[in-house]
Length: 131
Image (cartoon, rainbow, N blue to C red; front, side, top):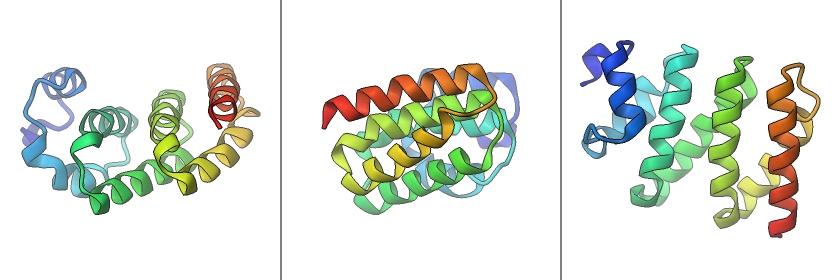
């Protein structure tokens, strides 16, 4: 499955969640999560969102750290939008993450990519209203 990590078949099946990801969760959190290619980064975010309910506490922490690193380190608008959505969706069950992501959303409201700035403003409003 991960031999064709950059191939379209992998991306389509991974994004739709039809590829039996669970046995590969450690590889997602490790070697695949470390690939600094935007298309891989946002697909990993989608896959981790799909798996989140099945992750152990330690895996969930690692997943959040990986996504936080991608949110801070990427300039790709798709990576930023997808990753912020996943982290905001996870924030209600993790107070520390909610505090961290609130600060990042404030920063991203000023991003030069209009879609990122707009999404950050919308997600910040949702997160604030949920508290």
